[in-house]
Structure formats: C-alpha cells, structure tokens
Amino acid sequence: MSVKDLSQNSVSSDLASEIIHTKTLLRSSSVTSQEIVPKLKLSSISNDVKLRHRKTQSLSISTDIPKILPKHSSLNNSICSSKHSAYISAFNNLDSKSFIDDTEKLEKQIKSDIALESKLNHLESKRIKDMQITVKKKEFKENFEFYRQQNLQFQALKEKKEKLKKLEERKYKMEKYREEKIAKFEEKIRNEIEAKNELERQREWSSKQKELLENKKKQEKEEKREQRRSQLEFWNCQKRMQWDEYIKERNDLSFVSNSVNFEEKWISTKQKSTEVRSRLERTLKLLNM
Figure 1 (spheres, rainbow, N blue to C red):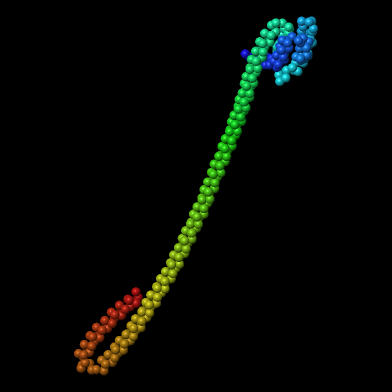
Figure 2 (cartoon, one colour):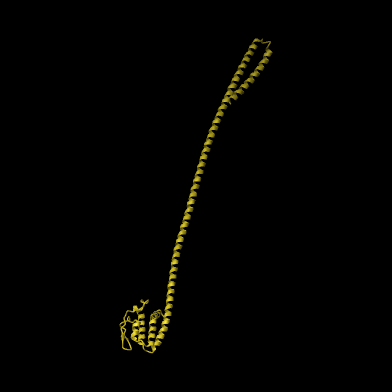
C-alpha cells in the first residue's frame, strides 16, 4: 500500500464516529434521512456535487473542505474527492438493505485505517527520532571535529611554547657560556701581561744586579791593582835603597880585600834582581788582565 492510499484511508478515521452513529439511527427506524443530514454536518461539501435522495430531496454541498478535515488541511485534492465519494456512497444507500453490510465493511476498513494511521504515526515518530538522532550525531561529529581542531591547535601552541622556552634556555646558556669564556680569556690575558711585566722586572733587576756585580768586580780589581802597584813601588823602593846601600858598602871596602866577597855578593844580587824582575813582569801581566 502506497503512502497516498494510507493518507486517503486515514481520512476515513475522522468519519468513524459519524458513520457508526448513522448506522444506529437507521436500525432504530425512527429517524428519517432529513434528521441524519444535519447530524453529519455535510453543509461544507462542494456545490457542484448534487446528491439525489430517495424522497427527491437534494442537498447542496459546500466546497469548504478544511472545516471537516481537522489535522489534515495539507492533504491534496485526491484525498478530498475520496472523502466526497465516501459521503455520496453513504447517503445513496441510506435506506437500502446493503447499507448495514457496507457500514460493517466500512467499520472494518476504518479500524484497519486507524491501525495503519497509528502505524504511520509510529513510523513518523520513529523517523523524527531517527532524524533527531542523525542531527545529534551530526552536531556531535561537528563538535567533535571542532574540539579536535581546537585540541590540535592547543597542542601545537603548547609545543611551540615549549620549543620557544627551550630556545630561550639555550640562548641564556650560550650567552652565559660566552660571558664565562670571555672572562676566562680576559683573565688569561691579564695573567700573561702580569707575567710578562714580572719577567721584565726580573730581567731589569737581574741586569742591574749584574751591572752592580760587574762594577763591584771592577772596583775590586782596581783596588787590588792599586794595592799591588803600591806594594810593588814600595818593594822597588826598598830594593833601590838596598842597592844603594850595597853600592856604598862596596865603595867603602877595598877592592882587593873584598874582591871575593864582592863577587859572591854580585852574583847573589844579580840573581835576586833577576827574580825580582820576573816577579814584576808576572805582577804587571796579572794587573793588565
């Protein structure tokens, strides 16, 4: 059964109470068709559809269908025409014998229509629920994707901050290491300069000490030379005096008597003079060195 047939059959459920009430009135046989018409509220059926009654009474039917179709105002014209046909069929067979059978069939059909309508409503509610679930799933997926992107951005930002922090720490360490290296190099230069200055001072002091020592040695040599010269002069003076005395003594003595002694003294004196001369030469060499 198609959706159109279900929609058409669902219209019959609105007529259930009116049709059952009409069947009760016909069985009591105390009510005419003129009393049934107002109770069915058929004043809203279309004017172009004219029904023939058994007592040749005609009913004018209005085209205002929505008044008798509550909750189904959006149905198409085919549903309205099927409802017209149901009303027309019911009123043409009001006094016939087959009306009771028709009404029983219609009642069964109405019950089946009610079951189909409830089923359709259940399916519609299920479809709405499924649609809501689908929307919620879509929203959850969109929210999940949004929060996932936010989490990824947060993680990227966190990693970027950690990387920047590590770079700052590395830069600080490198700066500190550079400063320490520069300080060590400056200290090394200062130590080298101080060592060089100290070495220069030691060299100057050693040169001064060497110069003083040389001057002292020269002075000592001069003193020794002067002392030896004075001693030599003193010794020469003594030798001259001795020689003069010897000459005087020799002149005073007689030549004959003292010839032997003179000769011995002369030899001894000559030897002594030779020794003195050699000693003087050695002394002069030592002084000139």
